[in-house]
Image (cartoon, rainbow, N blue to C red; front, top):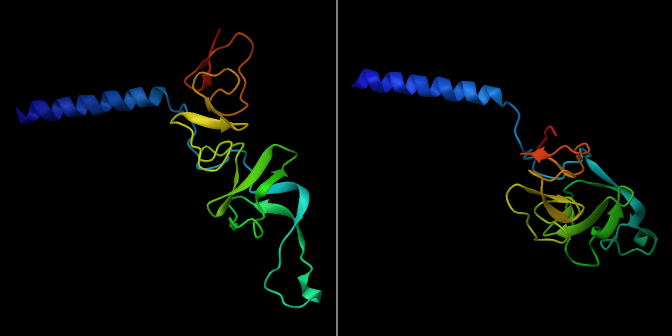
Length: 161
């Protein structure tokens, strides 16, 4: 009885291994954040960083900033916030302070369109809209990955006509 069980487990694990080797690529990419591969947002218009610590009139002049690191800390208070609907990367990113971090509401699946909106499982935020990337020929597997004309998107991969 025990040897039959061991043989069954061995056959089953071998079968699963063979089946998994036939499909080595995942249908979805589950990266944590923004998927455009950049580490910084290049601001379309430089912002002035408020310097509220200084009491001197000379030191009240604040430097400008033309880049913001992904996930940079921000203060949700409006007068201290550097991420208050600021456009970046030639209009392809829109940064808001969600809780205490700058987020791109046009591509962040946890803050699509505005802070706190979450996309459902298997969806990605493409240009501010939650999109099912498993079957969408315009966003197949990821945002902007368009299948050729007449080719269907099947489980996140452009298939054959």
